[in-house]
Length: 174
Image (tube, rainbow, N blue to C red; front, side, top):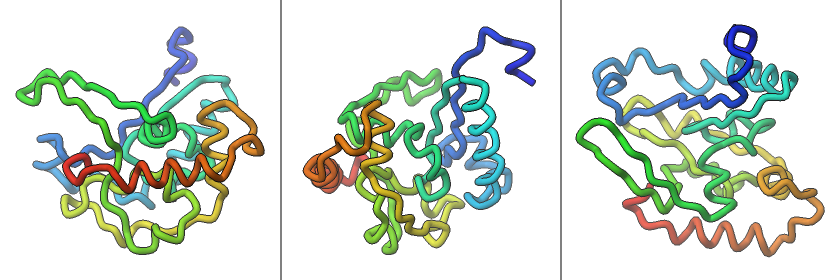
């Protein structure tokens, strides 16, 4: 295992679904549906937790990583109101992201994690809104873990503010 062979590696990033990359676009059959990797991802993240290692997960809707929702790169950016710049080695060059909101299914509107979830990237590119489902975990728990504060210290007004901010994300940033 990487953890045993390379003990200096203390942080892991799971960039699970990037539908916009050429290799994925050319071979969509290689990308699993959300339900096909949910259990493997949960096991891997649980292992990293037990080993005391840190990790982030990109492009996975929170309904498929509820127990580890605080580790979603997009959720962390949403909660902290951060932007990011990514430098690509191809023709994309540098890309600045100021909003983190992808497509969401109708059922997401009743999900308690909706305000802090970025949704599903790549709809129509092998990914389907029908894969999404609501969960009913208090958003304050996820926000608290992101901010390293007790969930009880997260006021409802903060959740409302985050939801309002997400509603204002321009379509081009989705």
